[in-house]
Image (cartoon, rainbow, N blue to C red):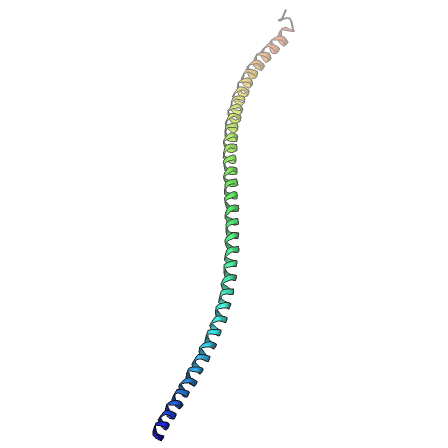
Length: 137
């Protein structure tokens, strides 16, 4: 009976030790769970901040993309206007150059005619001087 009692007491001590070990393991697991819960909260908070930052960056990107599209459209319209104006000015330059060339040609012809007429006038004036002004009568 004593032996049984000792065996039961030894088994009871062994169970007590196991209970203490399990209690310690449980306490450790609870502490680990609390630490993980705190870490998860911190990571969740950080993820929320990152998500908010990403959202702000995405919104800024969309705004920049819209501005870029608007600028490209405006730029293309201006370039188109400049090309039209350049063509108009080139046509005007060609017309002006043609008119200038025509005027230069006309001026040369008029100078030739004036030179011929001056030659005739000089001849007539010389003739008048020799005749004493009576040749015209």
